[in-house]
Amino acid sequence: MKRTIVAGLAAALLLAGLAEAKVYKWVDESGKVVFSQTPPPENVPAEEVQVNAPPPATVPKEAEKETVDEKIKGNPALDPELRREYCEKGRKNLEVLQNTGSEMGFVTEDNKLVKFTPEEKALKIKESQAAVKAYCD
Image 1 (spheres, helix red, strand yellow):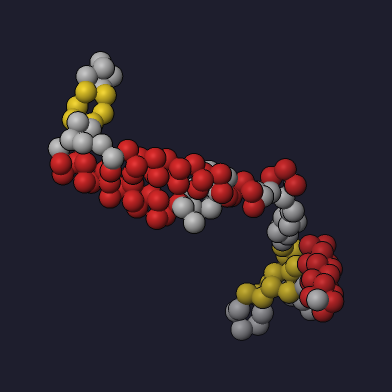
Image 2 (cartoon, rainbow, N blue to C red):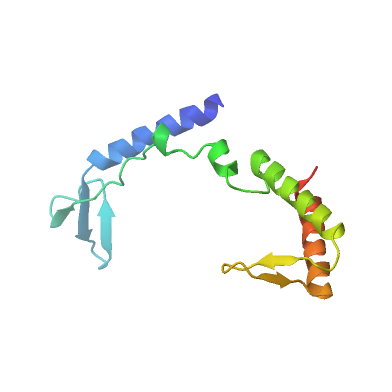
């Protein structure tokens, strides 16, 4: 742990030094472009190059950090309150579906009863069983 901290501090100091360092550009005698922090020989024309340092690393503010509770909240697979709610609804639906006759269905917006077919009722039972299995411990 101490080595990591020391290495991080050393890297920060080196980067800070590079941000302040001058960089020179020139063409050597073989025609290659050279970039260096060391100035070229006195008889070689060179230009000083502006180097933009990377922006400093920022640490997110406490308010911006997403807490574990925020990640869990609203996720029915992880949120205990939602799991309980979904479990309870699944159990109630399953009980109603299994204990009612063929007169089962749903009410439309204009208050008309639409009865489930036997296949629809069987599907609703399977969905409720899946909810109980998924959300009830």
